[in-house]
Amino acid sequence: MWAAKELFPLLALVAQVLGEGLDANINYGSPSRRHSGLGLDIPQIQRRFVKRDDKAYDPKELNFTHGVASGDPYPNSVILWTRVAPSLKSDTSDVVVTGNVPYYSHDTETYIKASKNPICVEYKVYSDKEARKVADKGTAYTTSDIDFTLKVEAKNLKPFSTYWYQFNVCGTDIRSPLGRTKTSPNANDNGKDISLAVFSCANFSNGYFNAYGNVARKDNVDYVVHLGDYIYEIGRGELGKDERATDPPHDIFTLYDYRTRIGQHRLDLDLRATHEKFAWIPVWDDHEVANNAYRDGMSALNNTEESFLNDGPGISVDQRKVNAVRAYFEWMPIRQVEMDDNLRIWRSFQLGKTLDLIMLDTRNYDRSIVDLGWNDNYIQLLKGHAARTLMGSRQENWFYNQLSQSQKRGATWRVIGNQILFSRNQRIVKGKPTIATGNWNGYTANRDRVYKHLYDNNIGNNIMLAGDSHKNWVSDLAWVEQRPYDSATGEGAVGVEFAGTAVTSNPGGFGDTIASAESMATEFGTNNAELQWVEGYYRGYYELHVSPKQVQAKFYGSPSVATRNAWEIPLANFTVKAGANRLSRPLADGRVESGFLKDGAVTHSNLTLNTETGEWKVIGFEKRFI
Image: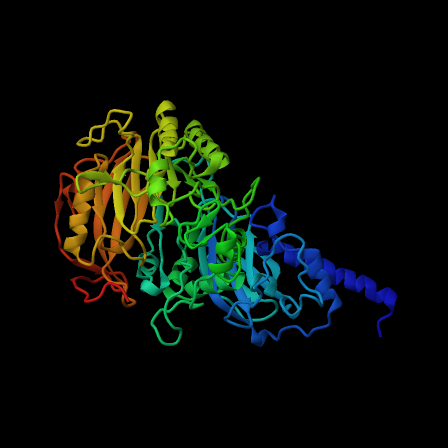
């Protein structure tokens, strides 16, 4: 029998070890180091488990339910992620971590069912695929408080090096899949070639994530950049009946909802394969929260009593955002951001002297009101107002400083990860120019400020990335309203925009056939001087191959997402030479597979690659979507 004087030191030791293990799991913290209210009270969780005498989980009850992932690479460290749990389903808690919440008490037990004893997980990082040479290792704990997710920082790694990693339940052979990751180059490393796969807009119920699988099978990039709409908040279909029905089957609002929806996506085999093979650098768009989310609301919910009572289960705009952000932070392999206010995800990465990757948030952080379906005429009137902002003053000033510092430090390229289309995309309807205002075209003064900073400071070699629109757009970055620009040569531009199609989401407004999509593409292409290629039929992604001398963008299409398949079709290739600040001519070497190419040809070869077998074949599909 333990004497009290012997028991208390033992309990203190247990609490210390448990506390260190909980601290090692980044997901107990806040998404921001300076906004601790979004984190969990680790000492309180420690006390909960020291006081209770619940039997620990039998290791046989536990599984690594959603594979592994890595992300936010630095030269000497990278974030590793997994989930180990007794159930595939997310924890049923709908209580969100904000402020001083009693995570476990008699009053809240019915709402927050605490875990049994914390689950102990070990991880090892190897410098060889055979898992013989250990580069780093550690131990961390997880509980139901964070949906059994686990996120650690692997440290003491070498720059621009490939590593393999694996988790196991402590003291057992219950192991996760073996993941692969890669650190970034040192900031001052010269001559490094960097390859990125760029994705956006993966609607689960629309079809299969073949684009993710194609990148995993080809295995010819260093990192994955995701520009947002990783999930969609919309519910569709009936589980157990409809193919790719969403879970939950309704629109999502609660913490449990968001956890469950992200978890469903992570069960997709192609998405899982891409996470297991590459380090990701993701950012959110609007649908990680809700359609047309902005600073103060979203399409189907706003900050009014009427909306609170009628447009959902009685959850406010701010609460819904916190639910979404908490789940995103738990499930995505991202770091805590050094931030001075909440909801910040904007950050940057120095990938050697070759490029600086600047990731923006043009949606949730501090965006002025957007078109919401009922206020479109109002937004048309406001779109040029100087006070309108996509980023908020803090982020906007940070962005300009990043651009200037990047040039000052001698980085060749500035690659900007932005959610929405930057360049003009007007077309003529009934003799009048019309333009969508949900992108930078609804915030023209903000866009002018970006252009002014680039032109006034002679900052070149800018590559703007975008997703969101579900179509491919390639443009010279040209301030056509204020500076001379030659569409034929590209002279007068300060860079290039590459905007990509969706993994699965519908190409709204471009029709159901290649002919209708190309007709619409031609309307846009002939009415915007800087726009050089438009394509809206294919789903897919693009790759950026960045060297000190040039950037090559390669666009790929998924012919059909109605079934899981390995087929993809090369659509177009573009080159930007360092110092040229415009697309190389002739554009795309004079031809593309689909869409509208200015001063070039469209040739429908239908020559398609099976990324699993390496077979090339002319192939057609009856259905594009489920």
